[in-house]
Length: 276
Image 1 (spheres, one colour):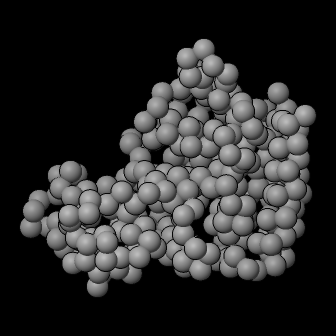
Image 2: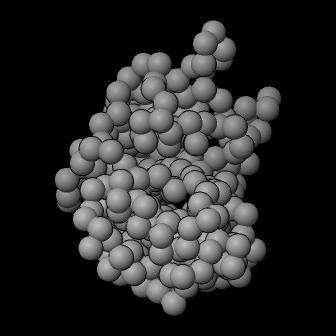
């Protein structure tokens, strides 16, 4: 198996250099504690073909990691295994802080509950006393700029607003790792861009470790501190880009465009290689 390439990126302007990763593990830097460790992970359903093969990965606490790849490459399967929703066929996953919160593409709010009550439900399941739940729910909705929508039901909210409520509900679980499976895929471009800004702000403010699955190259280039490119089945980590500039990025910026073009080129090569 070929080791994945690691690319360091400085986003003003983008500069890249590819060097082999030592050994087989695409490891996080040594600057902080590890939040997620994946060792030799493989996944197969029954007697079918391998879905994931030999995934080795360390994710540092507080990092924003984007998983990118063609449809069917196993991104969501890997996320579900990290979440504990599926079991690997081989290998192991360790989430240092215990369970992770998960946010899916569908907001999946209870339609008979207000935005505030949807968030309160997550707090109730966490064991937060009744007297404190309302206050904490309002604080979380305020964190995602929706405090004034606390009494509205989901049908009264736009798609972007429903996803903000879903984000607040995920944060209400008070888990240090947040797993996000294409949460903005169904939204229009302008709403998605606004939610990128909101998510980045929340990430910086809360210090969560985020693993974000997407098939949108520009989205990954806009959000990720680390961008991991997966091959088509069986899914493997075949390339990595590390963003060394810690500042905010705009999706329309030249830096994001150049990085997006580079990632797209590698993605196309991977798709062609697997189609051959």
